[in-house]
Length: 78
Length: 199
Image (cartoon, rainbow over all chains, first blue to last red; front, side, top):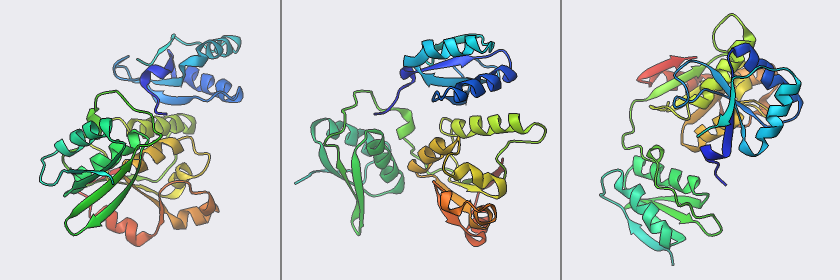
């Protein structure tokens, strides 16, 4: 089954350090994620974001909150 | 008997667009094309649609047998990415490290992962990607960019992995994408390129 952008969510960060920290805690929690550049349609700024299956958005949010990782937004990739 | 779509003599992107239309009614289809871009476009479409296909190169054309039985029908309209009408420049990407740039390896690793993903989305695509030295570690089992490299390979991009390098690191058996290659093939790919991009 081919995944579409609408199946994914992304986490956006203020700093690259936060993105690195988020990636670590999510991998530790054995969540399947992927670090991708912030898509052009979302921001023209240079930056990395974390892509995940939209179905686990709540889980992502709670893990990041519990680990005190700062992020600027969790949203759909669309 | 498969239905046959004779796409010989058609200008790009007509072969892939007509294949797409024909597959809406016929699950088994043989498309006959007469050029490489058409072959790549039709093959890529079949891959994207989760259909099986095989290619027969005959004297009178390239026969692509597509079998979409059991695959999910895809209603989306054809996307631009299927349609490459020019073979374009021969760009060779040389990846001789698993991190981008000098400074922080942690940051360099992230940049590498981000770049490999981005190569799927931007044009023009490289024709060949060569992995050397630490770069070969990107092409092995468990690599964070393996999925992206496999997709690049599915799209027809040649991936060459330096055998001397995998041997040095003792990871030859773990190479999971591309062709394990030698200095001759790698040097030829570099010298035949219109442009070599080093990462």
